[in-house]
Length: 437
Image 1 (cartoon, rainbow, N blue to C red):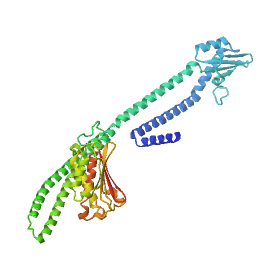
Image 2 (image 1 turned 60 degrees about the vertical axis):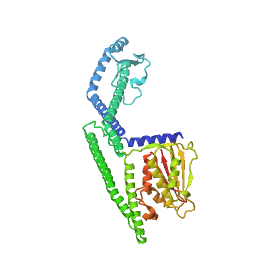
Image 3 (image 1 turned 30 degrees about the vertical axis):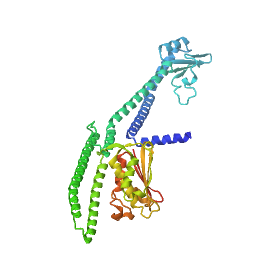
Image 4 (image 1 turned 90 degrees about the vertical axis):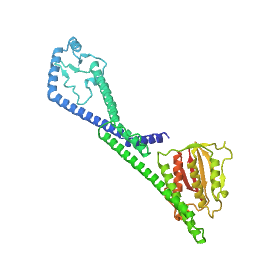
């Protein structure tokens, strides 16, 4: 279990790293700094090693010879002790009759014993009487100094990393602004442009996106204005045409033609109304007129308005306490219930039982479900039923299938209330569930 959790955590970390430009830039910076440090250290070590062999070694050899001569033969312990006090060195004298160390107990490793290729031959001399004098720079002060330098170097490296991260974060801050701005523009919120923090390439990109958003907003406003103007211009002649159709002579031959004409005019009127309503609901600027709505009572009213509403099965809460009034847009919710119920009644011809409509609460919202017991639709067509102007193959005729805006409007109403619309095959029939929040 623990191994699986660690593996998932590593996968999440790798996923975040792959999708974070900031993290990858910092990683590249660290790897570059590490590579440069290793190359520099390797080059300096090679340079110093070569310089030690070519120039430093003769100087050290001559200096060791002078120190050995000053100690004397046989070696004088007092002189050796004086040298260790005067110079930052350690001395060890070994021989048949003497074994002296200026720093006893420090271990033989410091003197290079047992280490192949060590410079112990350079720092040691064998006297004429057989005694061996060895020199070392491994004093406590010299031993502690590299540790201090190492910690200081590490602290400076960490400071550089933090500084680089802060700089890269500030450098890429416009990307966060651009991402947030793109989300706002995608949701139709054009009132807050992307802030222009810099004048580099990212600043120019933000400025261009702001210009694009302004142009898109202008096109959308022009589109809405055009639709409103068209609706106003089309409704007036349609109204006059309906009045003229109503005034046609009521002869047996003319009645059929008048009824067909009125039916077509009513269909054109409904199409224009649905187009306008879909445009209002799809617009992010549209505001809902929320008010306390008794959904159960609203459903009963819509059912009573239908010609075949008496046969509809109702599964509604009996008391207001079971389903209290909610703040909803009464007109839009009425449109949703009417379209769902009309769709269910349309495809219930010949079904074993009439449609059923039910209400229930779920979480912080309320579910409205309308189900018919008709033939249903093909599974591949379910996801397209809420698209505008989409009709199934069995509903191609306008006499039965309409123009394909009913379920699209229902989806827009549900989404405008912060909910969703779900369509599924109930076997038999089709069930459509609208969640309103």
